[in-house]
Image 1 (cartoon, each protein chain N blue to C red):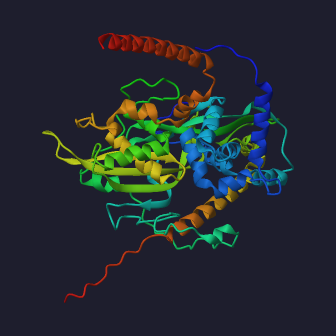
Image 2 (cartoon, each protein chain N blue to C red):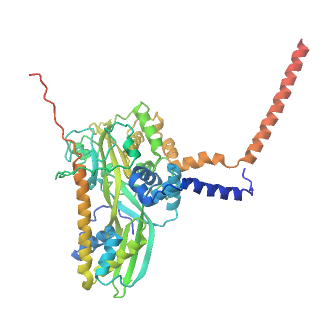
Image 3 (cartoon, one colour):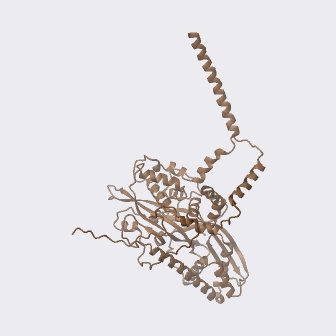
Length: 160
Length: 368
């Protein structure tokens, strides 16, 4: 993981990269229960060799002055990452906020499975379910916030 | 002067065992779980994360439990822990403009795109103790309403549309910012390093300094242009893959303070800005940070430096509560030898004083 100053890379990703980016991001938000269940559906967790980690470290989170200006370092967050290789040779990466090594490893295994045509659908089903859950959580939160929106009204002054 | 002294091992060991006992307290009560602390003492957990400069709610809650609720002790423990972890890298800049907003208010515009969203706030509560919280009564869930479709526009973008506020744009090359966790502080600092220090600065200290600017010690004429709290994505480049991915979301509080004018022969007058960005839900800290940020920009705007809040070296050198507590609390460590030396000194001074007094007495007597 290297320094990245720009929020949005100028280059557009290929369709395959775009799909993998989305998959890794969904897996980063998947719970251990969700992942174990998905792995159960394809016959359990496959054997995987750890190429890196799982290991916990820090990522320095950056902000921008005034929200849009020059960069500054806001503070760090714990991040756990793992890279695994399956017997098929497929390599998977997993990383997420927090210190859960088991979860990071499972998400790396699922990313590798997503690279294999035989298991792609199962992994995509999991990712879709995670996306639906997040959308529901976000929707509930947004609706609760919306209920606290102030509706201003002006008192009519009786001076006519 | 430091001298190696041995002894006290048993006393220290027993003191730590007693600390653990007192921390647990009455065994007939259930122990606090980390999940309970994260869920029910959330703002305390957020303060620990912000001032430890480490976003991890579980570890912050653990630190709070371990420190028996002593916030600075908890911040200290979490700071110490972070030094044991490797640094994987730097994130892309978080985009607070696309934040999943849980609260957004503006004191400058009544009707603005996205509206005034109060969120879970203490504002407008009566600050009366609620006896129902002595027990464990059922609590109703929040009311829900269909959210609006218009984006929650930044207040600074509204003002920027008319060029009435200073622009905040990335510099040409998007220069990498200084990192005070990697290089020692060297004054004068850049605004980037100041903001990093303020983001981890002690809330009480920054609050007092911010208050001082309002009371006339460096007047900045502030308006709370916008305060927003919510979740932002943390993205990082993965070199193995060749693109950036999101690791998840963190909650932050942002404050855009709009301050009085600056203009020049070349530039028409416009509002200036103070900025606050803090981990978690921490509105007071974000507001205080933005007031202090603006006060510390005095030199940049050619203002007279007349007040403590404008003095960068004073503010930044004393804003870190881990450093501050370390130096204040070290006074309780054994200074036996230092004190012996001072005791000898004061005794010698007393002897000299007494001798001088005797001479004065003798001279008086001789004169009579």
